[in-house]
Amino acid sequence: MIESFRVKFFEIDNPQIIYEVPGWSSTDGGSPCHAMYAPVSNSGMVEVHLIFGGISGIYLKPVDLNEGWNRKIPNQFGEPYLMLMDEEDVLLD
Image 1 (cartoon, one colour):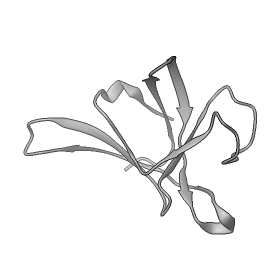
Image 2 (cartoon, rainbow, N blue to C red):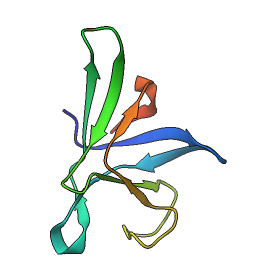
Image 3 (cartoon, rainbow, N blue to C red):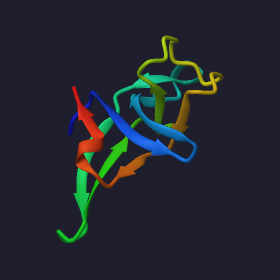
């Protein structure tokens, strides 16, 4: 498993954006922790790229956003996990 990376994906009204992805823990009311990445498959038929994190999932913010991690900033958001179809959308550091 890899613990440091970025992801890229398209959102419905946004062009392709590259995001930093830490896990999110419940420590101190919410704080970054290690996120993890693992390719997974169902009997070798289809492979997806799973990104998961702390007890509170993962958090994403655009790499060009020059602000610290803050759940109140609209361009930052959390997800329980991500499953990406293309391996090239996982940018390993």
